[in-house]
Length: 249
Ligand SMILES: Nc1ncnc2c1ncn2[C@@H]1O[C@H](COP(=O)(O)OP(=O)(O)OP(=O)(O)O)[C@@H](O)[C@H]1O
Image (cartoon, rainbow, N blue to C red; front, side):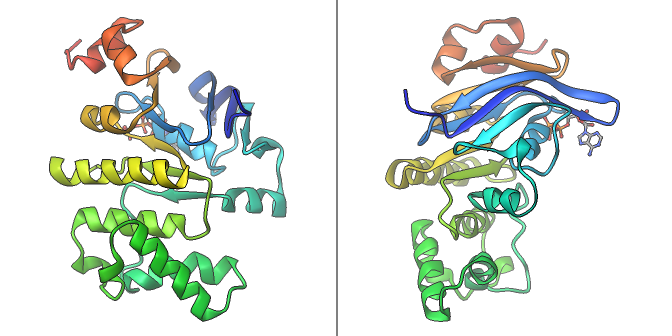
């Protein structure tokens, strides 16, 4: 198997004296759609924030695309962080900028392309998410699903190899959520992008995930890592079975 695009070794995440996750280790292969799931408060966002370098681990190491994030500082760390895209739960588009201007932001800030080339790239990204006809709209004029797609277009602006999505289908109706899942699958398939997606929507997990990592609050760490089908049909423990069969404890 080729060198993984993400490697996490014995990661421990804590806020001050409170440890949230202990001894988390896993790898993600390039082109995979990798889902992080688990109940409320188990540490999904915490793990995501560590993977994208917003938090420093209490212990353990993280490599992204061969470079060690946990050992990087300053300009090298910034460059590493620019190599991936992030779309947060809220979408976080700037409401006072048009959809096109939102996608242009990272291009304006981090590239030396001339303005015409930047606009070309931004319009291409909008096309990749099916929003080519909405470039001049203000975010508030878009539906929730379109706002999520615009946020993905912005996250794609600098041609990342990895895209991190935090609860992409939160707040969407099932049909719109399924459209977003289809977009994620299509981008992974056509662009060879690697996705790390935090979600607890079962339908979405089965629609998109090559593999799923399950975290658990009482275990303070990971309790399963496999394909969703395997986790459903052969759950390694009661919490995994409960999650995949929607049973109550
Ligand atoms: N900045 C912080 N400072 C202190 N504790 C925090 C901080 N962020 C999260 N926590 C705590 O860490 C634990 C894990 O939170 P986290 O948000 O990572 O869980 P989650 O699985 O993403 O939850 P949810 O599904 O509800 O969003 C929780 O007990 C939470 O209270």
